[in-house]
Image 1 (cartoon, rainbow, N blue to C red):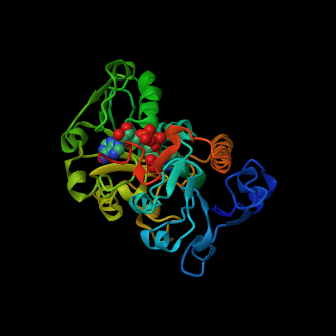
Image 2 (cartoon, protein in one colour):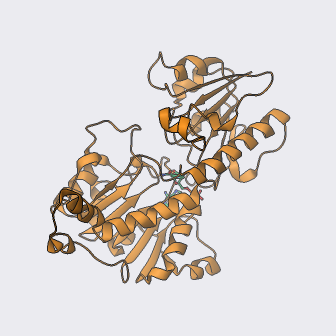
Image 3 (cartoon, rainbow, N blue to C red):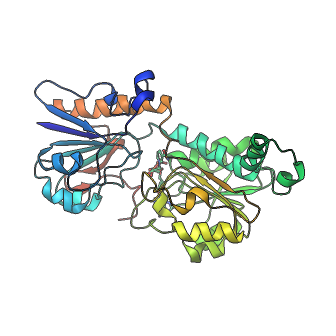
Length: 355
Ligand code: NAI
């Protein structure tokens, strides 16, 4: 039996920091098991990559959203032995999930493992944008001091309307964390309605029409998985329905937004800011517009590499969860139901769109 793991290189940082478990060097803290062969690599692009060479006879594939090995239908058709894909983290859209259903390949992720890490990052991104923090910090590093230049685009979160697309584990936690900020309203757009007590606990109101929803929000945050119903959801047309000068935070998946439309909306001022850590291609190319896009005042960009869900605390949780999923598989034990995205030949989750 062969286990193939595609993880990111940690280089010197992983040698010095053993808690960087999601790296090639630290291998989720032990993937090897008696009677299996395992290959751990970061090399994932093109026909000569370790990923494409070794997927053909692997039985188990471990990937991470932070350095996604894109398991297309074409690759799945070549992977004759593949039975189990495990996402070390949350979000399995880098696997063609419909093809996994068709080929009876199970897909599991470590549900819940990094949802607090991301929710904290979302709140940080909102504050960073709304308070115009990055231009203010850059001014200080440059040696300048001109308060009016940064204060002219700085606001409070208090009194603003905040809306989340997706009110699942992360979206809900974002709203929970915002309660003490005394925002004007918390809205959510999701086909899954929250129970009334859960709505009341975070002061959330459901809005059923996406254009109506974005037109009411000062800050929109995206917390839904990437699937057919969310790919390209935030495009030029929807951005034109946003409140002029709104802020958008997306730590869900880059491809939920149209990259060029977002850059154009920021440039025109239709968006005052955009922040997040997820990109439509990862690693993002050096000339990706989101690296350098700015609003008309030269700020409004809060982009980072994909790391919100891979804090050291999160890595401990998703490494333990990945190992537990593998142990269950090797021992023939039932998996945690919440971890199963695709079971044998059938969708198991309700989070990846209404089917
Ligand atoms: P979850 O499954 O708990 O919640 C997702 C929610 O989105 C569900 O309530 C679902 O009904 C809703 N949803 C699905 N399609 C929708 C649509 N078309 N419109 C509105 N709502 C829709 O998932 P969780 O744990 O909250 O994670 C959400 C996503 O966040 C993951 O799938 C992943 O892509 C991303 N993520 C990003 C991380 C990072 O490091 N940046 C780390 C962890 C997750």
